[in-house]
Image (cartoon, rainbow, N blue to C red; front, side, top):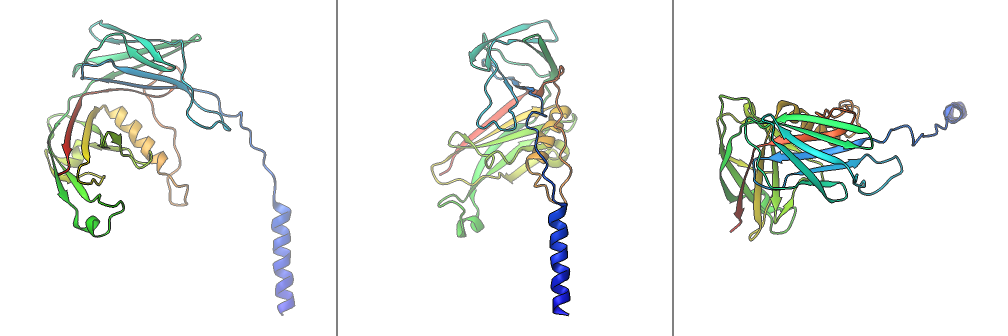
Length: 272
């Protein structure tokens, strides 16, 4: 009986080996695409647009910026803002300007007979009232990082008469904390209601650390872009994971990425 079982197992192994097939990968099957990363806020600053290209299958490192593009932003009142190349692939407005809530901004990029455009309105938003700090007793008992067991608590009011979406960034000592690019924090006003009180952030701090929170208003389309991005980043490919999907964009002309137009607010507190 043992011999028959052994023979059966050997046959299964042989059949599995016989069914193996080498499938060559075609590293050239994915076309090179332009990647646009733009941000216009209501801060008075030299606004920035980043232009690069997607990487090939065997490429490593950061993708090189695209030089020599013509970059222009216009608003719905006819104001034209020209951008100049500050460094390869990084374009900044020639003069500082602040976007206005309720205005629509259109980005136009030309490069090597390619034309890309995108339009977005700057939506209204709530503002951060206060950041407070407190010790998290559970984290203090067994901290992941020595000394870092302080929460920041967020207080803000949200205008319920309008539909609002938000992107949030948390910083520690000037460094954005997104767990090595694995987390994107977006939410809508339904999730928080009119008052957000003492909501702890996702980052722990130590005494002396400087904690900063940045809040950006989003359009519905931008909210979907960041939600898609977060879903793809955190898709582990398991049997219960959703199917990877193309990340949405507002770019026209075949580029990927997003032209974001956001009202902006920030608060900062030193942990004491």
